[in-house]
Image 1 (cartoon, one colour):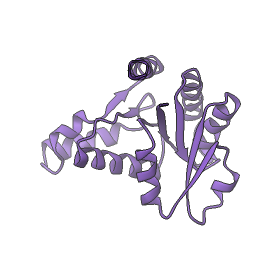
Image 2: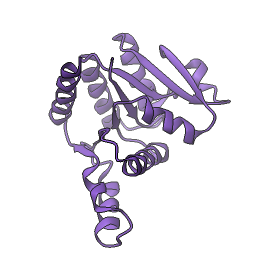
Image 3: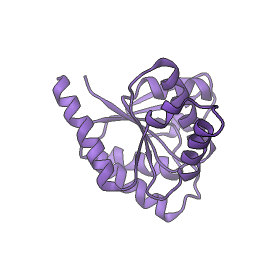
Length: 187
C-alpha cells in the first residue's frame, strides 16, 4: 500500500519569490521518494507550481476540489475527486493522506491546519502534521497555540506535541526519510 503526503499551501498567484523557491525545493525532494501526493485543486500560486513539478516527475497525484469549482477540471492530477464543500474537501484531504505537510499559505491553509489538528486531537490519531517554517510563516500560529494552551487553557497542552515543525530542507528530508523507512517496514 502506497503512502501519500498531503500538501496544503497557497494558491494565491501573488506568492513571493522566497516561498516559491521553498515550495520548488520541497516538491523536488518529494519527487525523489515513492510517496504519492494529495492536494487541493488550485493551479495557481505555490499549489500550481508544485503540481507541475510532480507532473513532470510522474509523482502520483490526487486532486480534491469543491463542487462547482472550475479548478478541478483544469488541474493536473491522476485522480480527481469532488467534495460537496470546502469542509468536506479538508476532511477528504486528511483521510487520503498519511503525512500532511503545510507550506506557506493564507486563510485556506490555516483553516486546513487548525481543522486537521482539531480532528487529530478529537480522534487521537497519530497521523503526522508537519509545519514547514523555514520562512517563519507559521510563527504566529505556533505562538497562538502555545498561548491558548498555556495562558488561556483553551487548547489542550498536548496539541503542542501533535504536530512537527521543520525549519529547513535538511530537517524536512530527515522527516521524509523517517516515514519512508516506516513505509518500507510496513511492506
